[in-house]
Image (cartoon, rainbow, N blue to C red):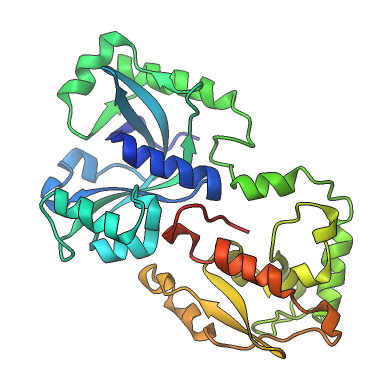
Length: 326
């Protein structure tokens, strides 16, 4: 169901789009931050944009405008550069914290400035082949508007973009360039035959005695098996590549907000990202340093190389280029 009769257009720079696109290809669809210095506050009509409104990323190239991606509006937020970096990392359209600060300074700000952030969810990207060119007769309308502006889907340009965008997205492979995209590692694992996946999950649950390895919760409906590393082949469907967790913790593990580390040869501890504090989820920080419960059979303990992969590729993956979800 359509959430709004408006479209929020964001005119993006090539570098911003390139970084967000690379992060999307690597780590999948996620939240994105389109930001500017506070002096560039949105006008009143944009302040009242409804959550769920379609947002389009429009890029100018050789005098023409192209719709190169987008997402769905969540909210406006006022963030410091540090908090924006902790929450969104490279999804701010920057390569590093140093790059973030340099871009803030280029707009006349500093590390104490307040950023006006347009927070998007359900990011989607069009390939160069699928990019949507804006008809020449509408070029001036884009030229005359600011970096962010609203289109009414009942007006000619808004109606055209809404219609053609729906057609274009309907024809996309859900494995690529859509808001369902989970990243290249997920794609590599998805095409593996998973006929034995239920047996793998059952073996992990039994090894952990049907209890969350972190909290000890034992209600089966709230438990889920987390893969440490994606199952690129059936050889990864081994108990040492799985951990039983409470569903919320499993989601945080898969999304890179928590990870695990061998403290020594006999103990594995939880590591929690401090970014959760910036996101209002500081309650999870209590698990930082907590030792997990392990199977009685040591051969079923998490494999060190799998945990190393998770820490280097998945944990806090939004803070560097090339990371992914598990």
